[in-house]
Image (cartoon, rainbow, N blue to C red; front, side, top):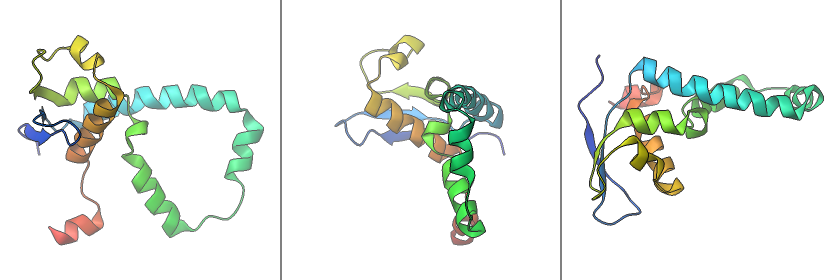
Length: 133
């Protein structure tokens, strides 16, 4: 399926404000994830090998691990915010015209909300959602 037509979504914490968001392609999503992974890798390096090894010790419940992995896979922190916003916002109700500079001037709350809305629009349904549709 090709990415869908843009969807109008009201900003829940700003009265009478909306964004028109589009579903991202696999390539756009992969790019946003890759940038975030590179940043996270650099942070992990600063912790050191002993800290990482300590985190990975112990028993793991496979079913719980699969659920955590699925939940984490589409967590907004796993993507580059700028890439999501630049690719996913196609229109908005602000008086300021939509531009890369204007997107960079969004407050953090709105930027994170919009990024999560784009991810929610883009991510494939899980098994439970498939059964209910």
